[in-house]
Amino acid sequence: MYPVYIEVAKFQEEKLAQRSFEWSYASEKLHKQLFEKAFESVNAGKDVELGPVQVCEVCGYTLEGEAPDRCPVCGAVKEKFKAFI
Image (cartoon, rainbow, N blue to C red; front, side, top):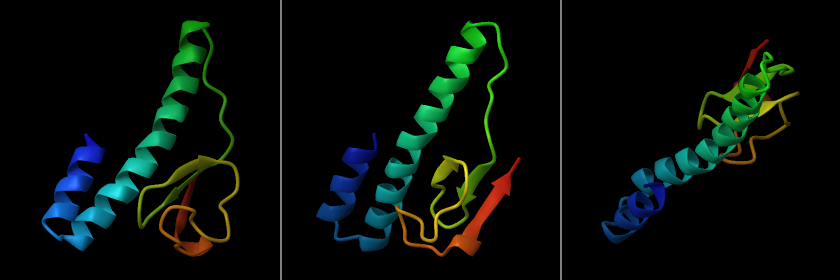
């Protein structure tokens, strides 16, 4: 879905929409990994074990562990990450 949205935004020269879709697409790929980890745990009859989860408040990039100095998706500074433990 996102690749098509990105192409439409490019065609319509909507740079902000294009950037938003690109960030969302990158973030959703990472969300998929976290969901797969949870799915595997549930299928094994276990709770998913995660360390601290960090979410970039600018673009939604999500990771397990410590926040990076800069978001690899949007470039936001470390302080823009919100921790969920």
